[in-house]
Image (tube, rainbow, N blue to C red):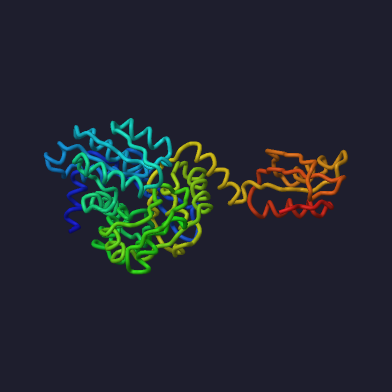
Amino acid sequence: MLTLDKIYHAAFVLKDVIRRTELVPAPNVNKKGTIFLKPENLQLTGSFKVRGSYYKISQLSEEEKAKGVIACSAGNHAQGVALAATKNGIKSLICLPDCAPISKVEATKGYGADICLVPGVYDDAYKRAIELRDEHGYTFIHPFDDEDVIAGQGTIGLELIDQMKDIDAVIVPIGGGGLISGVAFAIKSLNPKIKVYGVQAAGAPSMKNSVEHKQIERLDAVSTIADGIAVKQPGENTFDLCSKYVDEIVTVTDDEVSSAILSLLEHQKLITEGAGAVAVAAAMFDKVPVEGKKVVCVVSGGNIDVNILDRVIKRGLLTSGRSALLKVELLDKPGQLVQISSIIAEHGANVIGVHHERTNANTSITGCFIRITLETRNFEHVEQIKKAIQDAGFKIWD
């Protein structure tokens, strides 16, 4: 049974192992409220997961340690287990979905673990880890549905209460629910008035559906850039704790997550992964009430693959009006492109790409298309440019 004493014991065990991440003001997230970040992306291994995995491994018996440990993970729990096992002189094997970012796979190897890549998503890696545990007798370290793991994650809640006495609300990412279960239990035990909101990806709302329907439900499939919270089914312990201690669970889209990642990078100089940015996305897009309140967003991790980061930044620029792609129909004659370029220059936008298409079934024989990629200030700026181009007699296609 999870107790506040267990979470305090976890904090004692972890005090010389983890970093105590300090709160960071984030006024640009949502100016309606006073927003702070709990930057667990700056934690050892790049995420909060080391808290739970290290505490769990510290509580194993000598017999359990001697068997070696096995875990399944979307990437962050893997690194926490690998680090904790290596520090304690224990052999570790980690089952990862083959879609896990390369950076997470290589980092896990770097912390000393053996790797087993499994086709599919987290739940498939979990199934394979259980099979290997049963075959070889390893000690299984669950990524979220374990009281010791939950207690380790709950140390974040203790830190939040200590760091800011007058918090109105805390926003926490949810995958399997280990993080929010520990945080919510700790916070509600010490100050029940503080609201605790959970956030899931719209493409993986397993905990939200389960809590709303008052029973554990399994999704047929998950699809999100937030790979760290792409979980088909929550745990039994985490479901019970979320049902009891979490005030509300909301979802955010991949476009909203991309905008949050971009905002954190640009304004806070913080690199976050998709799962790490969902709490910020919820605050940015008013998914939970923040107006006039002191709100802390838990930024749970920063282990994003650089190739994915590049795509996310580009998507974030598009969805925030910082970039625009215009498809303009022209007459195929000299001077047309100069005229378009002049309009764009007059409105202070920057052309970063042009594609000229002369053969298209949708144009006249004497016509052509150009696709122009622009750097812009915001959506209002984009609309001003489009109107000016249309006023000059050109047609813009959707």
